[in-house]
Length: 635
Image 1 (tube, rainbow, N blue to C red):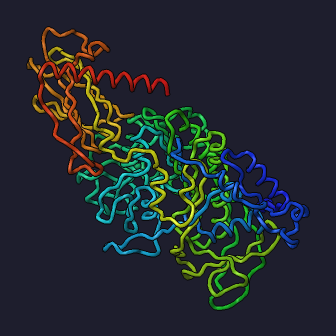
Image 2 (image 1 turned 30 degrees about the vertical axis):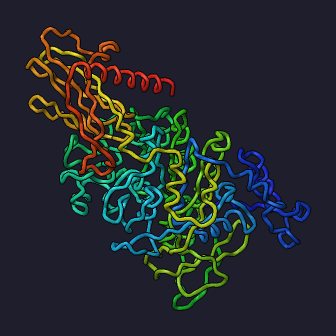
Image 3 (image 1 turned 90 degrees about the vertical axis):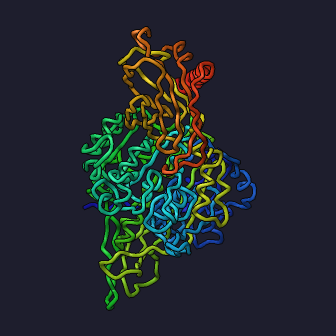
């Protein structure tokens, strides 16, 4: 196995790269690396000022970096387990002690945030884990370890991805872990145990939340329901399981996804062929059964608990199992951005997952390579942001971890590395014995930002602050976003004829159910796409006035649509614009459904079918539909 090519950089080269990035950023200069260019000319860190990173007084540069929000686009990049120590370990190895990551270290506004979670009794848990911490920034609400986007009482909390989607933004969720894992899963699910990936595990470990028991279903099933525009990662194994209830009972989740219009891709070539991603054709790329293989492998840690000595220092090597370059975190990030970018704006979360996973395993080269991967993804996000001019980029971690740089071997696990500078570095792990899983630590972690609203990360904040920073300018009242929904149907149809009923404006609902009042007949569940739900209805045979009630599954919003069954009705019931204007739809106000997890406000649904009210509401419904149709064409 060939050694990974050393990435030695002189200080001069590091300065040149940083200055080039500074000059190209749109929100003002970033700090240069040296206080005095003359001191830096030789790249000698032993000289006076030779190791400084600032270039003179930074007051104006920081002023220039502060731009008010809200941003049109939000890109949130998470290094799972990437505490300050993990960043320093990776920087020392890959860039040198005086080096600089071109992505992670380039964001101009930095701070620290606290990451504590909660115990069952509401008291603080000082050393948290990935599910509770991901839930904190996803929802703005602290929770108990192991739970995803529910509060301490297990009540679901709306996530950044859901709120962005309800506000008309496109959405994406990218990870090198399984797409159901804690960090990506916190954006698309609400569940009491983070391990309930698929229907099988959910039926046993999260039984009350399983579909067959009236719950929201497994994390994978909730992912399909939320319908982000782009999901890229691992975790295909859960999608071979079969649903146990609902419209797709006894179908695998892959079969279900295909039937619901998802573009399914499993390799780099398939992803490269995708040119669009939207509500009608979202992209689901699951490239491995589990987590992605890491970028680098290297020497195993040596346990010196009982004494002994370190082996010779060794470099990290390329992992032959690594996925194709088209599936690196950077390439997936770039592809997601290209598919999401548009007039409406977007929210994208990206996770470098195995910094944490390899830190647990005391695998120094694994965690270092994953940090380098994340840095390349950050570079791509910054390149887009500086060209776009209206994008907030935030880079942070979910919690700190255990790796430490030490000056000499210690009792416990030690890895002896040869860095890109040709120097020896010892990385030690001391929170679990050999063969165990290294623990998280409760330290605050770094958060850095660029673009509109990034000043809100400066200083000491809490993880929950990130929710409000990212969602600045969005309407967070989901029920209110669906409250103006309206329905449309033909004014009259022949007995037994098939016709379409369309409800638009269900912005914060991902599914809808419908009941025909006549018998009554339950027409089941359908996906809401870009706020629109369409039902193919068979008219009753009994002449007269009839209604169809469509209910948004997430907010409980109800829309009552009226139509007349008349033997003298046109043979073709398809509504034209003129027919739709006189269709007689009665739109009820949003009604908070006590059983629906994200219902926030509500009122009573009116059922009056007075002729004048029918016509007026129908005209209003048509105008809303027409405006939305034109907006969709324009975007």
